Length: 147
Image 1: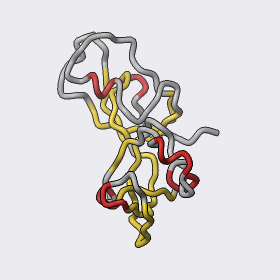
Image 2: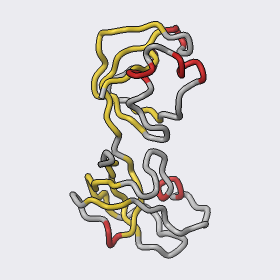
Image 3: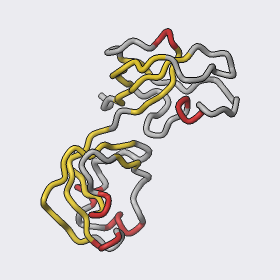
């Protein structure tokens, strides 16, 4: 999908988390291209940086670039019984309130409760044992578009 991003952030292969529009964006004439295609709370991967610029008062340098993006693959920890490459799952956060070094992978940014996701790759066991006793696997998930 095509969107706009600050010139200093527009690098092929980089990723960004869309946190929502700034107040000034709501009435901007580029809003349908810049903001409308993106979902708040999603991580996007920049596939291509186009050779097109627009002026934008909220970005450093006051310029944005046209970029082609897609939802990024997200590394997460899921129950080992669900970790089959190629399968489509409904993502669920674990029922866990233990603070540990792997918590960011159990509750990752960019994927939301109930999202339909494809397991792109099973990365195997995590480097540590789950302190809550869950049998987990590291996987790359691709959030799918809603139907």
